[in-house]
Length: 416
Image 1 (cartoon, rainbow, N blue to C red):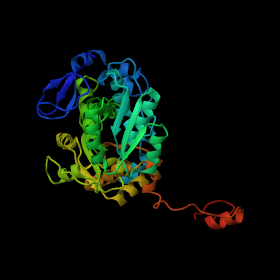
Image 2: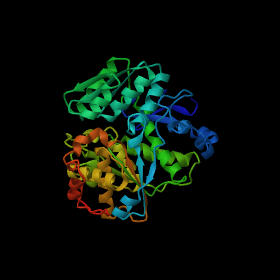
Image 3: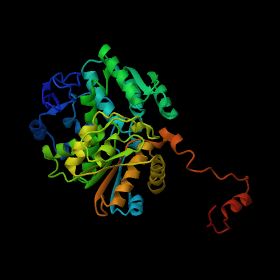
Image 4: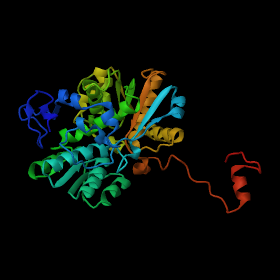
């Protein structure tokens, strides 16, 4: 594709052909896609985007695929919810929730990156798709592979939430539970990728896969009326999502869709796995790997591949980072559900918990246009909140029993 010029090393700048490679042979730095922005600028417009499909593929000019056949046709264009109730609770005038709990087909933002990765993998001639995953990615790879008629292998830690394990098995891929944490799974998959001719979406296909996250930035700008928010809060696992949202915002300026980027990028992690946030708060531009111990398993990457670049993006934007305890994660899930009717998984609890901290610290101001990214559905991590939400009221099948329980009379009112 003419707009996709090469893969380029993020460290030394050496360029490579747009094949299934992800590491620089000179310095071992990570590769990312290099585009011909001048050509894109000549063909792209707000109208062209708005007239496009109701999915991430309305932004195909800015994605690393040849087209015109795109897999995962329903991913993206999720709601940007004006969170008036939560905003009032936190003291924010203009708060929005970017709600990927309803993304297609597997209810997380991973449907974006997998749609791009599997499309590119098919273009490169692969017949087997695979991944190392903390859960959501595996669900999305399994679903997309089933729809595309491709063989799939998904590798997951042995302690994954039951709903996410089921969310793999239902599509009948080859599900491999590894005795260890995500970093153990990833190391094994790197070895397998080197021995077998498979498309590992977050290893040898990673330069293309990661670009799918940019669509969250594109949609946010479009849904805000072609303006950038003042503040965003983004959960961090590998750190890739944060870096790509930052990249996506600047791409929209580069190709002439917006005039300026004024956004501060804020990262969120759980205390039990917070190598990037810890480094930021310590004033370091490098992180120290950790052994994860948190209920936020979708963010439990102790050696984040893009941690350095996440720190760099946050510093460039003059943003911030913080972390929350597991108890605060649960409270964040409950707060979002009880104010906006959105049931998020644990990563969402991390985002809301850190958002609340940044408001209290004065980092996010009352008048800031703020977007919080909620990346996965709470039905996937029910274990995290099941002991924190109480039990149903149990009554006899009679009006008297109901009225006694809820202390209501004939004219209504009352509470249990």
